[in-house]
Length: 175
Image 1: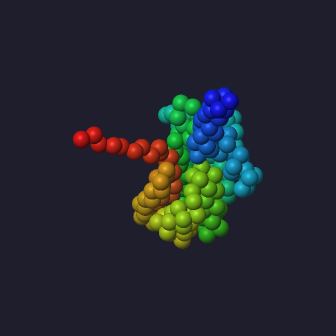
Image 2: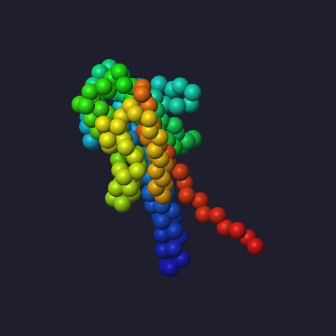
Image 3: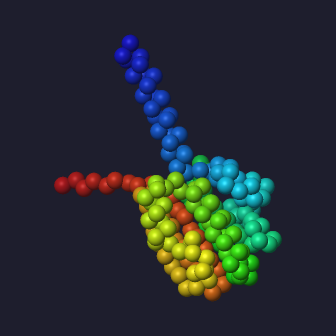
């Protein structure tokens, strides 16, 4: 009976572990679903996306037409490896418009990166993407959590938030 239980439980544990890792790396449909739960305007599907240079891109209309670009790179299984949220000063000159970008950038990071509360706090302390008054100044800021790298960059014309998922590998040295 123990062998039967072990033969049943072991594959079940492997299945559960694989579903947990998939939870950490959403595909585009899951990302869209998570974003739409935050704000319906953030929903998208594959018909909204276009492929350019192996990157899926979708424009969002936050304050005007096609004013924010979400770029997504996926692995061979369709899970998202990294994404970028980009905007131009022409569309986000006012404080209200910049706040719309900030809300969208926060929604994207919350939907893509499953961070602990401590990691979220550290991210907020290290990156200025939640500080619209600093948008379109010269910035290049980085933050790394256990599974994610973040870069927020800004210049006089563009703001860009980059999020990347990576697998943590443990290396051992044989003597």
